[in-house]
Length: 98
Image (cartoon, rainbow, N blue to C red; front, side, top):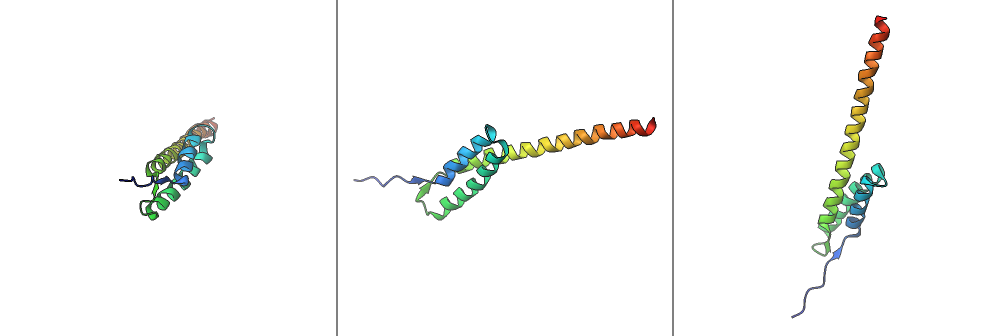
């Protein structure tokens, strides 16, 4: 009895995971965008391969790392803008009332 040949892992899935890790370490925003792009490409490639490619878990992990990082960046930018608007408004009120 012979075993079936092992399935090949999608290169896009591996790139997505590596980019997702880089998005949290060395390339904060660019790595996250790469993880999202390559993760979606990998999942499409794996779906179209009819079981010939593996790596969906790697692609999903890269996607999660990428999207969570981007969401935190957006929240940080919104918090910064709220901070600037709040204290800018206080400064404006102080200037108007003086």
